[in-house]
View (cartoon, helix red, strand yellow):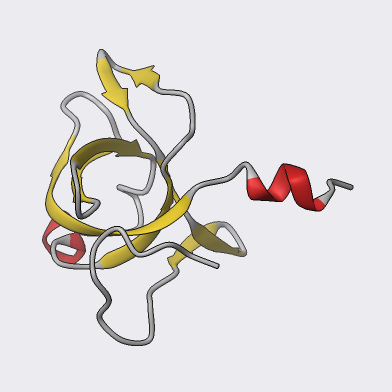
Amino acid sequence: MINIEDLNKLEIVIGTVLSAERVENTDKLIKLEIDLGTETRQIITGIAEFFQVKDLIGKQIPIIANLEPKTFKGLESQGMILAVKVGDRPVLLLPEEEVPAGSVVI
């Protein structure tokens, strides 16, 4: 169990995917460039088995923006996308309507 103070530490915002490309020599990794309204972030995600990169461009997805950066295959990931796990595959969470990039998830 976590308390509300722990939950409030998470900075979850909506980002718009500007570009997406497979990471060379990997089966699972995709490099995303995501517009957060005031900045662009690079996020490396392990969803390549389930999504075509062309289908991700333009999607608005929630990300954890204040997660400590981590390096995958020499590429820095500056956040984490949020998805729902259904069986063994991810399903993206998407706003019901278009919102400004950087909108805070409450």
